[in-house]
Image (cartoon, rainbow, N blue to C red; front, top):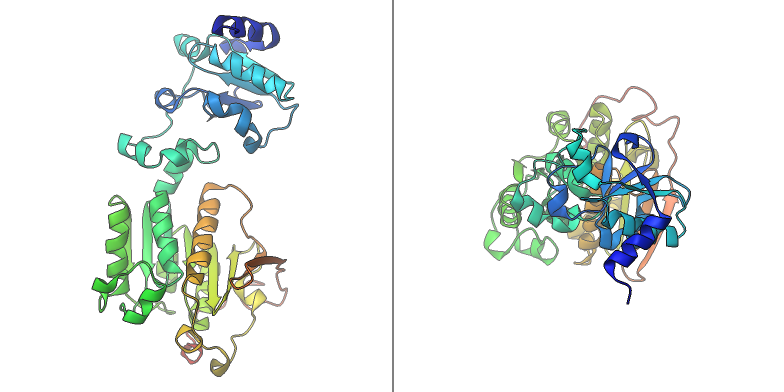
Length: 376
């Protein structure tokens, strides 16, 4: 069986070694293959972390082509040689290892960056995020610094709030003027039997603190209306529309255009759900898709029409997924697309959405906010 030293010698014959002085940190992919304990001590600028034992399996997730420049480094330049040899075997042709590794880099006084100010507790709590190259320490810090407002602490808002809190979103706003009722508990998992009669934002805040006490909860125990919508949405980076009536959906849309805040929209009806992401001035807005609210007698709410209990859990979790993707700048958010979900057939369809040149909300200056109580 080939020994470690024999593997190392074979790799050194095949892999190009780059000296720290010759490394261009602005060109290609700089890949740190050390463990999380090692990377916590500092990184080479622009480096992406991916532990050595996962390099070959996950290199594709970093969106690099076989001919792209990749320079790997570790502590002293040995593990990076072995990982680079694996990439050569996988068809990556422009691969190199940093001679002397991080130890040599630091001995020369070359610049390093701190991965973040994450506490040891945060590193352990979010470990499964941090090891993912699409998130990493920098991405987790982005989530901790993020501010997301969830409008509606009911069926959709419940899973969205729980998963955003668990993911580490540092500030979560909850907007709702209602109290917990027994009929809510069939789907609104943010609340429990003991919370009946309590304000939903109070009950929701208590539940979120049980998940992570470090999350800052901003309860807005009020109905969103034209007098407060701009102030509330303008205080956050992202809004989640988890409402159950057309009046508030149109208000959220118009306010988001005023303040430039993206909206992750979700809605449910019986066994069907919808999901879309609206980004002001870049994608179609809610009014582009639904120019006018339907008459009140044609728009029954959940009380009148009913809703399959697990359906808001599916759609609300999708909303949390889209929110995290937007905050992290990863994947392909549902920008300019409408997703429909049918729980009975377990089918999902997406359609492209186009901006309307005559849209009253986004084709020109956004209109003044107004309330539509007749549509509630």
